[in-house]
Image (tube, rainbow, N blue to C red):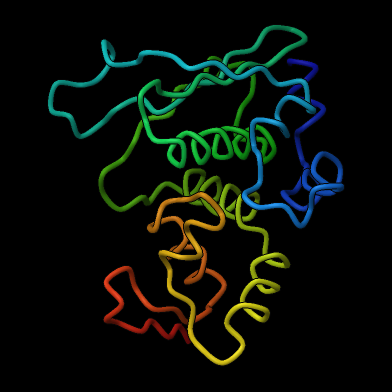
Length: 190
């Protein structure tokens, strides 16, 4: 198995932040590229368009390749910064959650335009959300900036440089109420 994969296997998002982002813990957004650099994981943009399926329902977002010692993540060239940040955090999640082994490398990540039902993908999404939107930091922002009001999901998404969808899913996961992107609906999660 890859030495670098062994190093990250089992790490939690909190452990990664404490070890590779500790000085910057109050700096937003979390710079996933810097964290990966400090971890010794290389990151490269790549044009995956020639591999896309013709029905456009599945596009390759990222890939992980490894040799005996190193790991590299490839992310889809031309996507938004928020999309690429989440892809990199998601790929790291697969490594930390032990979803990958010698039989699954190289690993290719497809975008799914529907509801995700695969447990590994759900777990990787949760981990990526925890990494890019840490609970402690999110709660601090909520208490400091929204002491007597519900947060707007769009503003929080901007603060953490994630998509509105990623922020909404994180808030739902943490069962925190928020106002949607149209400023019309209040989501109260029980």
